[in-house]
Each structure stands twice: as C-alpha cells, then as structure tokens.
Image (cartoon, rainbow, N blue to C red):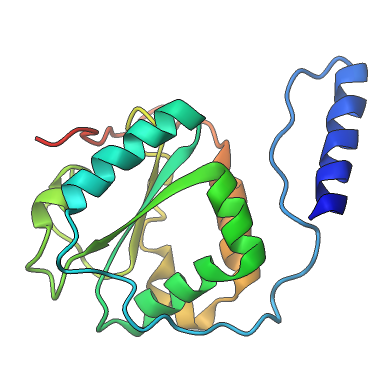
Length: 184
C-alpha cells in the first residue's frame, strides 16, 4: 500500500506541475482476478435499522466527501454473499473504505425494507444484489448498472475494484435520479 500511495502522490505532483488540477483515485495496479473469494455467511441483518444506517452513511459521506454504496440483498442469495465476500478482500476493502460509505440493506425475500428501496425511486427489486451508488447529496451515479452484481459468482475481485474505481468520481449523469437522503 505504501508503494501505491507513493505512486499516487508522485502522479498528483506530476499532474500539478503540468497544470492539471485534479487527481483521480487509482487502486493498486495488482491484478486481483485470481484472489480466492469466500462467501460471507450472513452479510445482511434483519434486525438492523436500515433507515438509520442509511441516514448515518449520508452524513459521513457529506463530512468525508465520499460516495454512498447501498447493496440490497438477502442472506439466502449466493450472489449477495459472494459480492459481500469480494468487498471484504483487503485491496478492495481499502479502496472502498477510502471512497465509499457502504450500507447493506436486508430485503429478506422481497418483503423487508421495501420502504428503503423506495427512497431510491424504485417500486421494488427485480433481483439481488442490487447496488446503488450515489453522491453524498443523493444523486444516483450508477444509473442502469444497479443489477450488474446479480451474477457475482461469475465475477472476480478485480471486477469489483474496477467498478468501484469507475464510480468513485464519475460525473453525475445529466438525467440522474435523486435518492431521499434522510428518513421519510
């Protein structure tokens, strides 16, 4: 990680010397596609206060200047458990911790926390995991890709890191929907 920080710092200094004002976040250059992924047994909690956790994530995101990643799923779903396992791999976790506030929302078998789903302008879910990424003020960034992880078992950790990197500073789409960022 120290080498990555040094490379990133050197890149930022070089860009500043060229008159470029911003540096985008870059993950480690190591290929993570061969890392072994372990499915997490129970990444979702039926007892969690999903609204409270989401509200707190938006507050932290506003303070830290990060994005909010909400993953809707259930413990019965292998792809949800595999996606959760990918997020726990050290290189992915480090990057995610630096750029996102992550909230896991248990939807049971589509009968739980549907009011939280509604905060994102959705009437329901077609499948899980459904991943929504927003700015700290609720603008939905990953429009059209929220279903991308429903086949997590066919993906690898590099795919997750690439996805997180793509949306860490992606511009807000012109037609972005807005989530309700505080409890209705």
